[in-house]
Length: 295
Length: 222
Image (tube, rainbow over all chains, first blue to last red; front, side, top):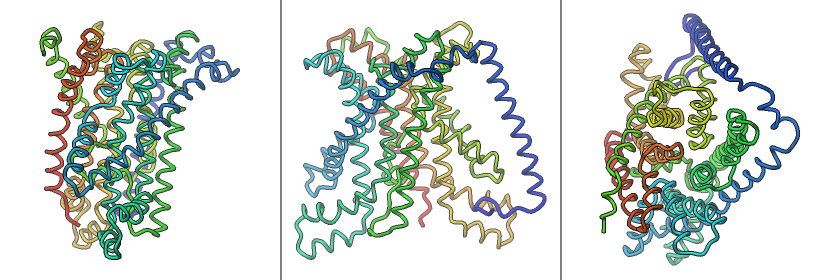
């Protein structure tokens, strides 16, 4: 195999690779042995601690599934509200009128530079002080508010760079045949940009899903991570087991989303039906210097 | 109006945030570079390890990692990271460890995307000129790769600064935790939020602008 960094390998390089492999394998084995022996010393490998997850459905139906439902509920609500808001902000940033463009830019840059957690804490206090939302619902409202404010501004950037990635000739051609500004955006630019942005939007879903965990840790929102804590209390301090199970669920969900995003990206790149470039999440990050990444 | 600020150690909390960010940035740059070297290297086992690490760690919420560091690593397994009996020190170090483990997977991807922007023709031309392997890397490939990594790395740094707030989950006295405390004790919600928002705007916006300008300046035009 040849790449930009190294050429196809000869006999000496192959021998060296075998040596590296052996050394690395020994290091990995040592690490694994240390982890297992530490777990064993502290009695964390005992079957009693892991049993609830493998026998019976109580742990799943009482703790994990309700938590997962709340996680998904918050994430879906946040996406559904943030997408149109983000699209509106992104289009507003491209407006010809300064009085639309500048405020939209300020809103987007402001909310992107503030941590989601700060927005969530603010939301929680805001709902407590100025609305009569019941205290049971408040954490959900706060989590969704924080996620919407932050992700709408990130999605606005995705929409903006999606539209900017289209060739100039598209808008010029549309104006030349007499379409008005709104029509150019609605009929020509947006449909092409949406296909280009899809992979980046799907990657953003991963960020939203991960950030719901903040609500469980700090705002007492009963989602998946919070249910890990309740479980480890109930099943006799099996922190390691509970967290492992919960982490595996997060990994499976997010890995499915990430794989879907890159499949979509490959497929759109191959199809090449639209004129626009396909925007991966990485492209959005590089598109604008001051931007905030997809972490 | 701002009287209530005197009762709280805002400067101390911001300083903790900055410390968390700087220590984690240095650590994740080191570990992330090692991961990137494994991921693009010629040894299949190391490539597999790098890929697996990035795909696993990237998909776990940072909150889960940091809470696990505290509840699992420290309280269950007794890892103290040399902090002795001082819980504040232990939690601070655990937060830095969690941030490093998490952020390095993004650093790895940023560096790798930089390497991927260098066309294979560059290395082939360099070899055709008779440069050795070391010279190809040192004179042709890596300079171009580092230049196009600046902007993605800046984005990772900004995200890291904001992610330090997650340390509040294990009680590290940083800015978000102070905000929560202030909101609970004072009836000044909007004012407090504005001050905290300003702190983060001041921390992240210039970082993005400066590094973005540097990134554009050194970028390789293709």
